[in-house]
Length: 110
Image 1 (cartoon, one colour):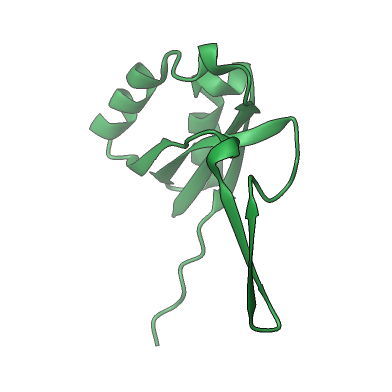
Image 2 (cartoon, rainbow, N blue to C red):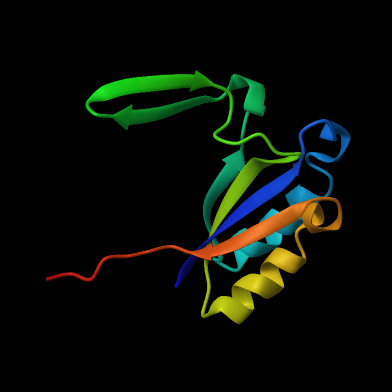
């Protein structure tokens, strides 16, 4: 099953941004667990889009103002949620931010 790790932290804590991530990712890539991922530019460079009554509304910045912002993501291929949680707990960002683990919806084929 595929899982998305959404890695969040204080956008002002950039000194931790990549601490230890290389070793964490290399091991998982060798094991065939990482399907993709990457870091995101700062929330100040985001644009949020909404369409209401056919009108496109653009807002500079993230969807919500919060102390922690999503700074990166990883897509995993795991046996189950327990394995995804175990992998997420070993990500360096878990020690200074938070990681939301969410199953990826895959529609059934007809």
